[in-house]
Length: 109
Image (cartoon, rainbow, N blue to C red; front, top):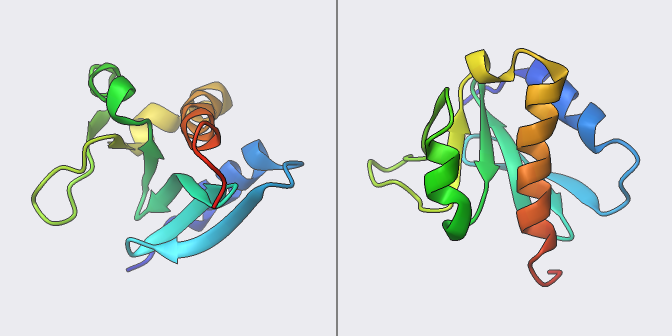
């Protein structure tokens, strides 16, 4: 499964300068990990964001989001943000930072 290289490059630019970030192919796309914990990723043309269970409902109330559901069952704590919700650098940064905040709250792996 392919992923949007341009969007992946935009995510890399947001995460630039962090020494605790790595990349790994996951979920048929590209995942970004902070201290070994997934924070976000690019699947096809969408951004996958790990917001955590406590922020899940709030994230889904935002425009251009939907549950992450690879198998037909939503994975609580993860959302997809469509390309329409990522048009500006500010919007993308906000979503990536949500994922970084949650991943950074977890013990390093």
